Length: 253
Image (cartoon, rainbow, N blue to C red; front, side):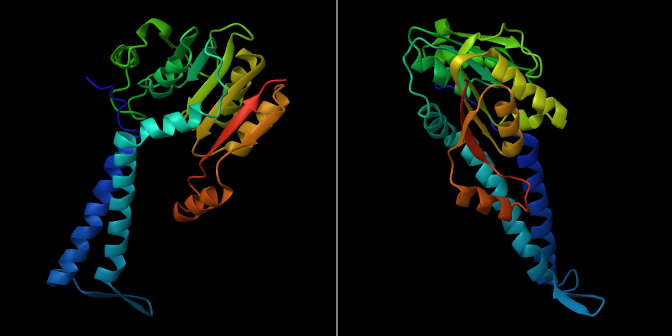
């Protein structure tokens, strides 16, 4: 059986699809004459079809993009992120917010003489089927179960000694800490558990300036954003500023 890494933010995917369906129904009802085809708001007259059909298509596209990206695009993205590290093969790796083990298992494949630990608090709203036994099953399916362990732990207070890991990875996890002080604490903890000269790859959908500031203040002054600034700006525009995805590569002093 192939590994199954789930659907990211399944509630968001569902809500986008439902809102798109509602807008589409209103547009069709306008086309059929069940609701007025034109609506006057103050001095402006608008078409019910023209008003509701474009948002319907936009919401449907967003839902489809998230679903199929989660279902079929994750492995390619994982390898792109892990390629940002020059691996020796004996590293101790930590995956912060490991979920179903996407990055965790991928990292374990890169360290045949090392080990990979994943931590999470297993929030199902962030990832479908998010349970601690799932990444272990995926590790077994990909043949790296002997190098993988998982722990239930909060990224804001990691249960590891200073300098415990050569590499820390995290994908689309830290933004789920909604309190800015909590995100600061998570970045400080990642910097703390990195060994001197250790590296981190952090991919997330927002808050990159905050992460950069905290890493630099925590002894990781070598911080580089690696994704296209043009692509980040485009996504920020089409999502009205809610998403500004990028990837940072960090090296501890």
